[in-house]
Length: 95
Length: 379
Image (cartoon, rainbow over all chains, first blue to last red; front, top):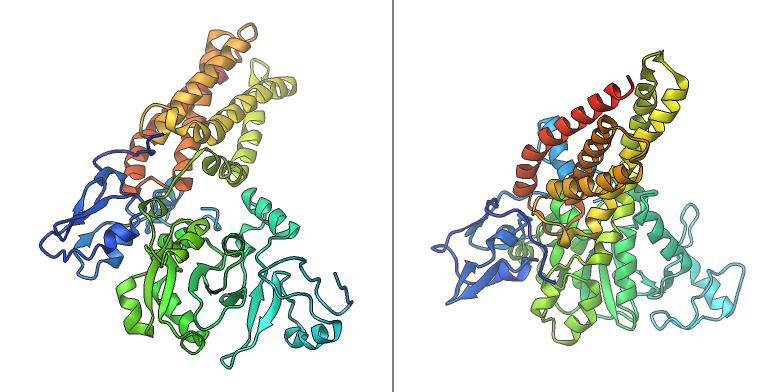
């Protein structure tokens, strides 16, 4: 079965190839195979598989990656709208 | 099996635990059975160490562990299913044994010790307030700071002669691996996504295959998450029941109890059909339903099940009540399916927000059409 895919062309992931040192950490931590390392540089090969978890950006030692990280959860986003704060997955640990 | 009134029951044939000691030794060994403290049943012995004793945990789950897991799956007591953070030992953990970092959600801890059956390892349990690794990493409780704090608090550098922490890959959103060595002298190696791959990962010199690094979300993975979705909606469901029975009584006689009962029950059945379609059928059929948006998947499934219900009760329903049924099931199913995004492993916040902005007005409109047709159908 092909992997489950979500809405296309929405993710905020950005890679600055100038800064990248090709350490490969992003491809280690990514749970959806978004990155490949080619010619000692990271490249985004599966942009639409990105879930914006923020693991790659947080583990990039040279801050070559940016992403508006958060949880892909409707309840969390509604919570954010209602409270005017950040989306918060405050569901008593049920998520 | 030796039993002694002052000793905890020994778990038989558990290679993770030492053989049952002599009764006298056992009682003498209960130095940590202090007034006001209760020993967890999974602690089967204590390992002595100059830096402090460490509880050794069983690698075989008991009936209580398994019923506890079922309670979590059905949403009972989820906010207090945690264990004390700190250091635990599996097997005869020694200075050369690997250190596995995990969360203090008991279900996570249980699965980890079960999967490490027959191995020697240290478990460094972070305080994630009883939340699993991935969610805690997203919330920021499974973090670089907490990792460093537990390394220092447990005096880990005095217990092991290597300087490697194996952190679950799904903890990576909360941990910056390159900042850990400076803070506590240990380096981070990201382990596999699933604890069941840990033995293979350790045996291959701490190397993960691409397969170990991917998150899957199969049929069973999706289905086990549906009960807790239903339970989390219980208060919305109860308030809806009350509203439906009150509105159901409105009719030509202003308010009728028998109409409240009959029309209220019919409306309730439609609503529950929508809930079951959106919160159980959609997750089960997720890859096979058309569209990427969960709200649209839910609406399609809701229209289908609403249509089947309308056909089944075609003799009892006129066109306006059939319309009410169809719109109600579609709207409720779409809403519930949209909320399943939070349980999945492949949705991005940007995508969820986009679909919600489009779907919520449509869901509200469908519900309004349904409600008006239903009320009009009484006259």
